[in-house]
Length: 213
Figure: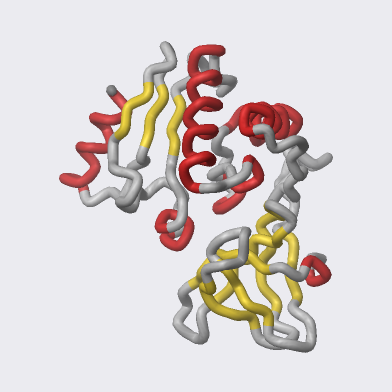
C-alpha cells in the first residue's frame, strides 16, 4: 500500500511513475490501474502502451523476493498470459528495455530469471522457454555493462511489430538500417529504432534474426 500511495502522490509532483499491479511481502496483490490503461513503468512509452507493469516488494537490498511474493508473481503472470494468449517468453524485465538494474535480483542472477520464466511456462503447460539475449551482462571483468547489441537490417525493408506473434505492425526498418537490439524474445529480436528525423524512438519486434550482431 505504501508503494501504491507513492504512485498516487506522483501526479501532484508531475512525476510519471506507476504500474498496473504491486505484489506485497505477504503475497497480496494490489491493482493500481486497470489493465486497459497505460501505466508508466518501463521508461519507454511504446513498451508502456503494449505491456502490463508489475512491481514486487522484497525484504532487503539483495532484491530477492520471498516465497509468498514469488508465488503470487508466478500466479499473476500465468493469469495474464492465459487471458492475453501470451507465452512466458513475452515476460520481460525493466532492464531489458532501459538497462536499469531492475528487478535487481533477476539482473544479477540470470539463471534465476530463466527459472522464473520456466516456472510460469510449466504452469501454462508450455514446456521450455527461450533464453533471452541480455542487454548487458551481470558484470564483466571491469565491473561495467557491456554494450547493447546492434541490429543491422538486410537488403530489403523489415517490418517491425508490436507483438512477438508479428500480427500488429508498428513500423519498419529501411534496407541496411542499424539500430539497437535489446534481446531475443519468443524467437524474435526486440529492436529500438529511431522514427525518421524526429529524434523519437520506438521499440518493437522483427522476425529476421540474421541482423543481430
